[in-house]
Image (cartoon, rainbow, N blue to C red):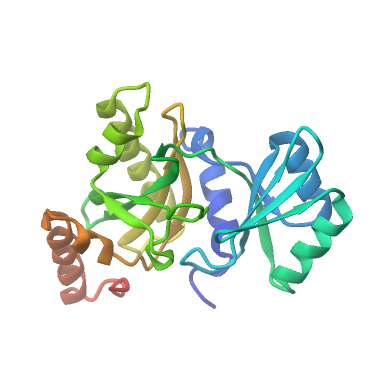
Length: 255
């Protein structure tokens, strides 16, 4: 059995079980027609994502306006509908038989009207505590809903992104919250995945400066750190990976 079988759904329940993480976890449910409309009635905007997968593939954003018009946003394309039936039919054909999740859409902080989230790498050595070894901001391309570099998003140092986002909250506070929540996330995951030594967290900051845990990837890509002018975080991540590899710990992440 795959150690990470259950993917996003299993990890969501791990996060939800912790009272410290719970306020930082967007409400999520298994996709069905009922959950789609319930979430839209509650939040007006939702994200639909495959139960398994990475790289931002297969993600949709569905919105409901005050005029009861529906918008389905995929990549940089939008489809508009006036009734629920055609919306559901469109989504069902797009996702095919793949199991999906429906999740509250967090209104991410923006830079020049493009949403951004964070890649946070958390690592540990045998017998040591978890440490945040790298962070950067992933900024979506104009018109796109996903920030992934595979979708040609761009990277910025965390401090630069926070400065350009114009948040009405201290940058130092937001940065410390990101680190606090990231470490807590890794600690909770290690209760289930006790032998794992690296996580790549996708975290969000909303327009009020609140920190959110969006996903936790057990085999994160970290090439984005090489795109930063300062390569010290990339070298630190690599040093941890080399150490763990030499000591026969879990497998290295994807380059």
